[in-house]
Length: 306
Image (cartoon, rainbow, N blue to C red):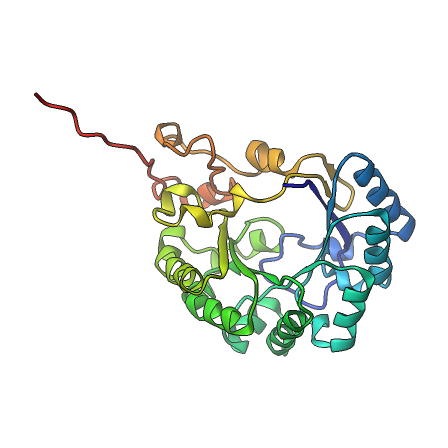
């Protein structure tokens, strides 16, 4: 799988999500300049990276987003993704511009099956209608549409309904990412962070719907020990390697960062057969709820008797 660079081009956003991992960066950092982004793209391509994700914040609010996509295509990137909350995709003309510029896939988000849930989580009235319309418009372009849903206390019971809606809309793939307790999520953790074991019955029903319909579906930040029978849905197995360009920080290998700094292993993880491939939960989660939910998976063999 080709390496991919993640460039956060703007922290501006037309949502104000209570779970936002970027926290208050919108008030701290300006848009990334065109010259800087172009230099980062050229450097990444020269180093062998062949995929790019423009993200943020809400990257579609950067006035040069179309130019950035066009530049990436001209340089030679074979995978160019826009990771977005999907609201600007509600304008069909903008979708057409993205495709014409060279976008190869789009990653919108949806955080509720109902407007009341989604809008409350995003802090933006009307965002559900716009995001759903945006996803539908993106599907009509013919591009792969890979959605993301952040799993919180407010929406986990709606996961099956969210999956059903996304399948009806015709997305290529959907992913459920367990809330990462940093940024705004850390400030709202008592309200928004559920126990993973409470989430799992709803999550598995949501995955069942996708698997039945042949739609790719994944989870993120859910350890293997909770995914019995759904191991193929663990996204960490397939997340492309590569660097991340953040506000004032450059992470050379985000996969290595997740495994060494971002996520953690518990006291019993060494006994698990998935030790080498499981990344564990984000390290902030066991600080909140401990390690009792995570039980090592072991292979048991019957002893041969004469």
